[in-house]
Image (cartoon, one colour):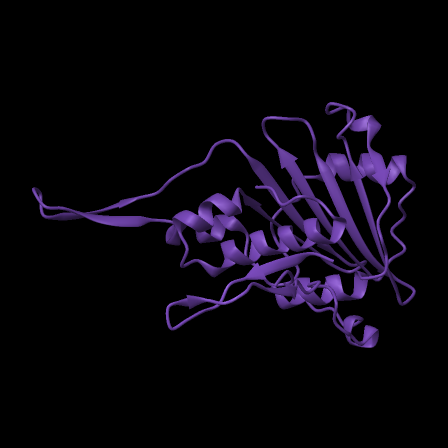
Length: 222
């Protein structure tokens, strides 16, 4: 169990350090029955991962016999280390799986499956729903908000400036049922949320990425 140290200061005197345990964010109770009703609107955006989805489905014999499936693809522009996390509800049972190319340098036929602890899958989905994974807009819908304004004091005009980050990571979120599908994506949300901190959707997208990375035991990254 991880321990953090807190120092208390009172009347100019520093008291001895007090050790407090850091709570596991997945350590809470959830009623599994409450997670079986999943509602989202079908989307119009096409999937960025159609080809890779077919590869994964073929390599690991992933059928379409599910009630609901969530996929998060992480695509790295500078390295071919794509990976996908899959959370599936089938026959009233949640399962999580994770596949990556970390040892294959981008060869899409060499995805490897990693072991995933199934003990907290209910808590994971509960946290993702709390963080609006079912309703977040596509990042393209936020473009009009991703502007910083400044005043040109010479011309006495207001100018709006946006920032584009060309490299990094593209996260593709997929919500799937036999009857409908919804796809949306975010590029470098951790960077953009620092530039446009008032846009809540950027923060929620990045938070959901971090939640899944924490669940998998991965070090948080962009």
